[in-house]
Length: 626
Image: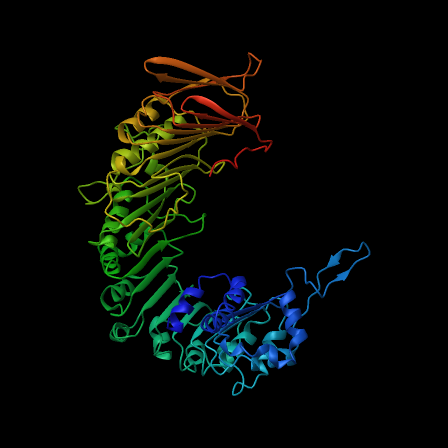
């Protein structure tokens, strides 16, 4: 069968590298494709570096290195180096750092003529950086497109200016740059400023630049310096970012396909420029403001301008609008219930007319964080909850003591939580029955097409309840289900309850809104003494499977109905009147019940018959459940 090599290469990229050598032995066709994939990326650290040094002068070992496209060379030893370790007085192996010399590095790079990406460790000093500066670029690395250094690229240190020199040395071939332009850098003096420096790179298409210097740099200047630019990630600490009028036409006709901007704030004129003159080819556009709250920014430039920007972003394939600030930020606007309405107004404009899968993440951990993003059919939002968002004021102006999440004013915003398909709450709370009920009530009453609900208490990081279509752990932000969304009651069939005794109202709401629940997982891992509890699950008519994990001292009683006859099962009896009793009531015999008690006993009850009792000594007894 004559299969193109490209097909094999595409298949083999999904095979673990350790298995590719075995794959290469199958046949001649597979051999070439498997070896090409195997040598596509080489990583050297510890043992690998030692072996490379030992064969550096034996050319036969490098016969396949013309396929190498990426090399990662770690200078600092992080693992035990087998074959080059020494022993201390106790006979224990010590780590030995062994790095390439200048000759060895040059020799190795001679064998990799098609290398495109070189990543070097610059955390242990300047050796490798110095070696690159001594290379003859007409002989070595003529096809190099990207150099990265395994150190914080946005941290100014002794190697920073040397790294800029290395970039400049390979300016004819490099296509990607990551630069942190700091006021202490010699770049301003040596190269005449960042714009002049970048203009020497004739083939640059991707730039990530953080400008913390005293020299103002604009998006326009970066594009003039690099006319082939297709992707720009630009961050600046300049407080007032303006633009010149003649920048507009140039931006509109540029080749940019990806633009990511991080600014302290954006002025009205700059936002107007983005609204009307974003590049026509743009497919990815991110805005991050790190020194102004969303609602302060609305006050600064006006809600109409923000809505126009959000509407413009809705026409881009991948977009994000984000405000992320320090926790000590002092907001200028007064927090009230209208802010939720403003957020949904912007969200509606940002969404546009697209049919999307919408995920919502509400948290009171950072009340000044707001984000909305869209990509691949998924609309994500994150909203930092303030006190006023969770507790409404009554007619007397006093704040209510019980939780009630504020809804947007539908006379102002045409959308609300009904667009949510997956929703997660992270609140600073512990076991609060009323709060869990309120969260469940908000989700089921306002979101008719839910696939997923999760409520997490941030004080102990324990999820308090979790609703999903199956018991399989799902990625909250994935786009795994983009099929036409059905109703919540048809989607949700699994519930996990953790660390609280569900109230009658909680169970009743589940039965009313989620009649198709067939699998319930209940866990209580708190060891503190709690009173006896009775949980009536009999209203969940379609329940077939039940898991219980109780890591506390208590008596367990299970009651179920079989042909109008009540039956009781008592498990793991404890001879102590002081121990509370947990009683569970079902409307029918379960197909399958698993119970793990505080003693590590595993009970398996199938159709009401105790079939298996095992003992597991694990302290947390949590491994059994997914």
